Length: 297
Image 1 (cartoon, rainbow, N blue to C red):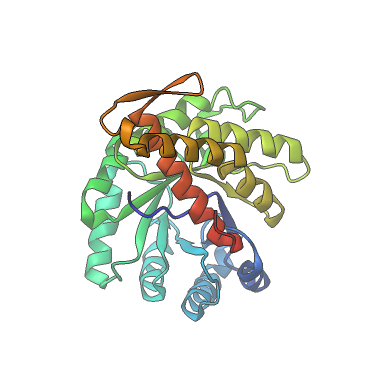
Image 2 (image 1 turned 90 degrees about the horizontal axis):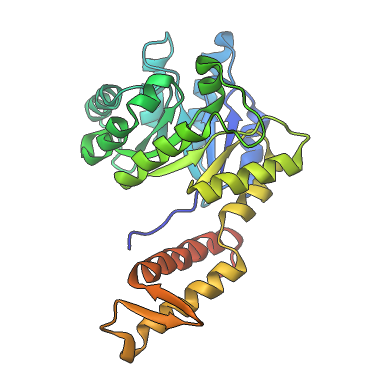
């Protein structure tokens, strides 16, 4: 099994806020997304770009995965953002407004010409109606090594704006689009993160939406405030009960008498080999998550 990198919590940090960039070094987020796009006013975008890239190059963020969200390439800032981000060599560059696979091909071409470090991957925002309609084609771009596509990120606020769908509790209008993008990601073996929750005062609502995203199959949630990190880390990580169940399933299939069996009876439940594969992934994720706090499972 490929090594799992936990992405339970992915916190957007405004690139123009120097204090926020420094504070990110102390937060328990799995991913820090340094934002040069939505969170930064036009008149300070150049300053934010310089500040973010200096912070990434300086390091000090430990195990956290560092991602730079650039402005779209067709904007006045996009090209300069990409050049600077490549030089900073983050773990990934998050490209906004990806509505077709061609956008990712164009980014991949630029990365190659700029001599981007191989470790720097590409993440894609899925935040337009056309992106939903083209979700499979966008995700399939990950099969092309030149695109470096590693993760999709749902931009639910932009989706709501463009479709006029209302973001209500339960997200009934949004669910078909979320699941379309998720199916595309899974079909092509890449991760996918749920969109943000806008209310900072509704902790119960946030937990409910994290639970919904987890149950839908998302790898984690994008966040807009540090106060949301703990709940996302808790709810997207395997629970104690899930880990114990996974251990029991793996142990049962590891018994010599079950070596050639496709299905076994475990505690009154019929367990198939696919459940063993799922269990091994649960244990691998739990182990990866444990490194965040320094306690191994």
